[in-house]
Image (tube, rainbow, N blue to C red; front, side, top):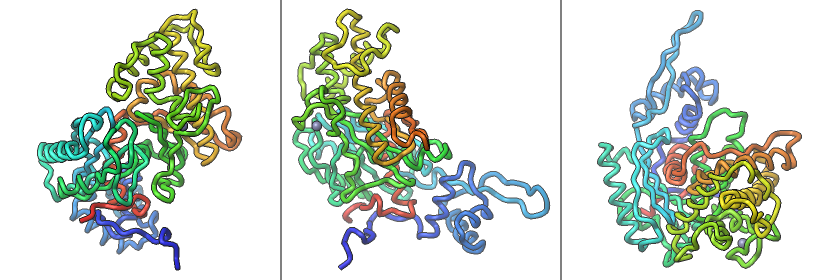
Length: 443
Ligand SMILES: [Zn+2]
């Protein structure tokens, strides 16, 4: 008996193209300025006749369009560059987060055409949230004059772990009552659109893969995306493909131990990387140190998020005297003689040093060239964290004599989860290897 997992999975999400079409679309979307038919034939190994037939079909379906016309340098015919037709089709991305729900409409390039915010998942039941998302999807599509037939589907990015086979969110932290919620089925029933669901960290990695800078020395073929939100997760990209694992839950790195003196984690252990850099821990530590007020409700993710912003603002006002004195010390040894601002900064620097240890371990494990940091918490800590992360990865990773391992801030803003969710749909529609993400609606 062949292993069940070795078989390619079927899907109900509509595929745009057969395999050769997918190969051509993939080549065009990875090009910077478009490709001529001659270049397509050379890159894909398909015959000129096949290229001609397939590109005619793709033009007819408005998936690609003709762009710049290049005159030949000598004899020969002029060449026309073929590009993706951005508004030929669209994808919806939904990011479910305890503090905010974001819905975006993406064009075929993965660019945001319109976006809206919905109820925070922590304040409502799954059923009410699904209703709110469905109306927002309808509003976004209608407001942009997009016909329903051009919407490929909805992608959901949710806190992990998730059951991608059942399309269910399992037991996300800070979302009481959200036990094994079949979000994919619920949203499909509410909208009639095909739906695909994945983890926020995996979706964010996919967004980088789709939207990140092209051709930067292979960095974006092999990288880990560290998603910093309410918790910490990683999306893994190897050889230009999202690495799923046996249940699409690869990248659950939150309990990697990085500091024996670190804070106690929800798992009962001390010094897990997730606990060391999640806003909730940092807020609790800062409140204990008298730097900010203590949260009135330790289970309210929005209040914790506001206090986290206060802590980051405080740290950003620190003078140069704080400069990285705490990076390798314990939070208990923060210098009480320095200002509140400096102590806040030292606290973040300590957290960054712990995160850096975790990032270096994961980079060593996978031999990637870059670790990309992003997610809803990232922009507030980037200026303190990034230099420490860059320094650690450049100086401590094992493969550094062969290649650099760079730490990068995400090229996408805090909305990376929602954009990544939309990219799940684009990936499924375009990719030559859709089984890596699989599963559409149950219809
Ligand atoms: Zn833990």
